[in-house]
Image 1: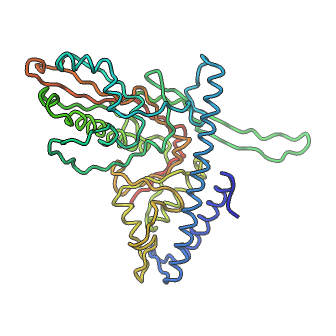
Image 2: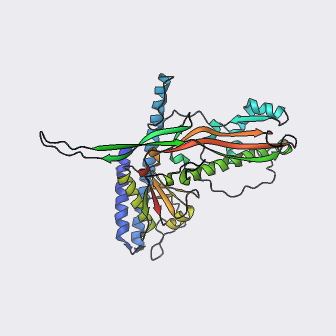
Image 3: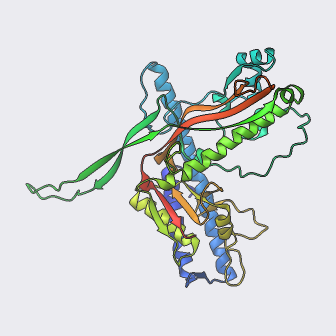
Length: 409
């Protein structure tokens, strides 16, 4: 019977994963898969089942998040002016206003109109909070008109981000302080009448994450902006993407020094699973188990470098059969029923299994904005303009043990 609730879907998915894990171990000898075509077909059926159940879980979870967000918004509407806790319960904020295209915001902006009227002199600050809320930033996001693009063909870039795996949030100050439960001793036990009750233990560690800024700028002549209609949109789109690409890397591997975010991979308390002699899928499943046991959480996604995901995707048995489907199969980016996010933002040969929601959250302090100005060095007298893209935000990890690195892939 098909699950009809999020709980039923999660239970069915967990049972399917356990069954597939036992099946795979049965045919793994000295780290190598040895099974015939019939067994490969049987495993593919298991993987297809996990994929469908994973999609069902994602759908139920998304529906519950939307319902929670709507309920939160309605409560806040009824009690306007009340404060909001910095530590979220679910989404942590009402639904955003409808996202508008960059071109629309630019044309309607009073400061930018004045900047153009002044002959591209002075400074224009253009707030893009509504236009910013997208994982990927491309020229299409900024309503580039179908005109000549000055002969420019963009270089190939990896456009995959993990920011949408995390809870979204906004913050008004320069930092966020919260308590992480770092000790949980469950001493609960049956107790005889008048007997001594067992003592449990809880301990908390205060964590503080600070807002950090990511920015990039490009100089351009005012003649270019005036004469080449697509130049400005193209430059702003590429600057926006540069900021988003750097944010993706910082969320994963930022070292926390100086102006760097402290990424998930470098958090104190994150778990580690060495691949060793295990096949990579086995090592990933062991990391899943560690998140469930050590982190008391259910993973929501797996992040891998494209080269590492390629090695998994091309796994074959001794007789040459593809374990995750052949070249003609429209196989989804999933393993053990979990979504796989393949990105160059993570270090090669290291994977990350995590319960990104609800145990990680990215807070926007200032959404992406574009600043255009002649007020830099001698730009004014040389008819040059600086175009700057920047944003500010912080990453909070509420339970580090809900994440597990897989090393030696």
